[in-house]
Structures are given as structure tokens and as C-alpha cells.
Amino acid sequence: MAINNYFSWREISIKQKIIIDTDPGIDDTMAIFLALNSPEIEVLGLTTVYGNTSTDQGTKNALRILEIASRTDIPVYSGAAQPLETEYTGKGEFVHGHDGQGNTNLEDPVTRAATGSAVDFLEKTIKENPGEVTLVPIGPLTNIGELFIKNPNIGKDIKEIILMGGNALVQGNATPTAEANIRNDPEAADIVFSADCEISMVGLDVTNQVFMNKETINKIVNFDNPASKHLKKIFPFYVRFLSKFFNKEGMPTHDSSAIAYLIDRTLFKTLQYPIVVETAGISRGKTWMGTGMDKTNNNPWENRRRVNICTEVNVEKVIDLIVERIGS
Ligand code: RIB
Ligand code: CA
Image (cartoon, rainbow, N blue to C red; front, side, top):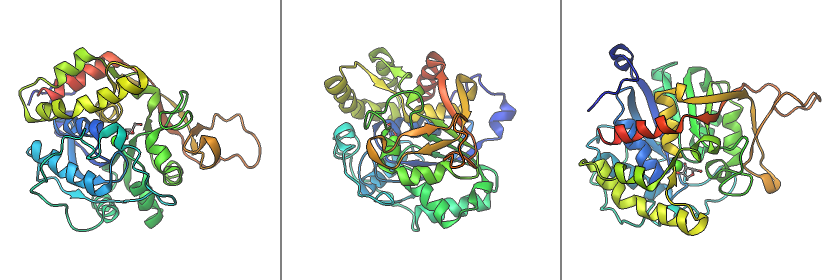
């Protein structure tokens, strides 16, 4: 594996321990490969959630992705099958295919999910590594919300939550006001944004900017390695969806942008404001920034920690990083 020049050997030797909470998912798949191919990162486990596909299917996909990457040493824990207060709609399947992998009908994995719940695994791993584990949710926030419901003080032991989701200054993608991961479970998302821990939000403000055109996609899917060969099978469904519904040639880089932020946050600029998630009405799922202009007593952002909200990104360097790592 080639080690790029972002970090010195010493920094690489102190790997960032992460758990990826995922609904795999075409773009989740690339994000997982990106993390696995990055020497700065140690993936402690994958936890799955409904979203792009059902939790059962997503768990199979997670296992298969790890088999493709020859990383079956990493455990997969199956997580929530439904949002906290509503029902899973299955709408993500028309973006990612009925199997979440672009209708490529992957062979069933030969490996099995670990026994025990995703939430118990998250809690146990965080407690065993206090202050060291970064959670990287790239799907709906139900598992992470359940973790805080189970253990409201766990935030002090979490190093950081770097999540793909939300939209601060731009419109949504699931609705005009809301991004898909947050819209799938706004109640859980609001619990997460009220937690007492460091949170970075890698949302549509930047992930839509990191748009991979056909030339970039061609590079990513033509490396001679199993990850690239798998992406070659699953990307066309997503690209066709974007072309058909949005008349766009290529694809935005949602989940991999969260991994890129984890690797090198100098590629991003952030604003620091608390976030409240709207849970009612036409802006259900909207991540509202509290800019400090509301001086009333019932200010909904009061007592919330500031979130690092990504608003600008060095598109070229993020894309170069992804291409380099998928090719390594
Ligand atoms: O809005 C983008 C997010 O929703 C990504 O996590 C993607 O996988 C989709 O489900
Ligand atoms: Ca996802």
C-alpha cells in the first residue's frame, strides 16, 4: 500500500481508531474501501443501519465488502432496522438498488455478523478505549441516538463523531430542506447533536461540491484491485439515477468525504455553531445552525456544544486523495 505524503511516519503510527456506522450503500462502499486503504486509520468495526437498503441486506453487504477487501478480521454488528419513532420506507433503494449494491446481486457472504447488538458493541469499544474512538456515521443516526439513550454520559469518552449528513447553507437532497441520512431519523439526529462531545458535520454543503466527473470515475474503477473492480460493478446504477433524475453526469462524494475529513481536515473549512434538527413540518430533518441571533429565553440552541460544520472544501485534493487510496 502506498503511503501518501500527508502524514509523517510517526503520525501514521498513531492510527485513528474508528467505527463506521453504515447503510451500505454504493457510496458507503467506496468510503469503507477508502478507510481500509488509509494507513492513518484503524477500523475497529462496522455497525449497520437501514437507509440505502434494509439492515439485513446492509449487514450482508458490509460482510461482503470486507471479504472483497480481505479484511474479515473486522467485525460487523447488525444495528437498528427502523428509525426511533417512525418506519423505514425503503426509498433509498431506487438510488442504490434493491440490494443496496446497484442490483448487482452479490453472492451471499461466507462470513457472519458478530453476535450482540451494534449499540452494545459501540458502548463496549468506547469504554475500553476512553477518549480514543472516533465514530463515523455515514447513514441514518439511529444506532448513535440509541447509544446516547442507553448511556447519556458516553459522550465524554468518545473522541469525536464525524458524520456524513445534514445541510447547513444549501438545500436538501431527500426533500428541499433535508439531507437523506438526517431525514431518515430526525429524532435520533437531534439526540446526537445535543450530545456532550466533539462533532463534525460533513454535509451536503461540501459533499455535493466533491463531484466526481466521468473521468474521475473511470480512474477509480479501472485499478487492478478487488475494491476497484467491485466499484466498477456498482457505480453505474447510481450514475444512471443521477443522470435520469438530476441530469448530472457523474456523482457527488458523500460518505467518502467524511473519511477524507478524518484523514486531512486541512482540506475543509468549518463554521462553529450548535445544530438543532427540525422534527416537524415541511423542514423535518433540516439541520438548523444556531447563529447566536436568537436572544430569547427559549433559544433551542442554548446549552448545545458547537459543531464543526464543513462549508468549504478543496475539491481537487479530496478527489486526488480518494483516487490515490482506492488505487493503492
Ligand atoms: O445524503 C447522502 C447520504 O444518503 C449518504 O450517506 C448516502 O449513502 C445516502 O444514503
Ligand atoms: Ca450512507
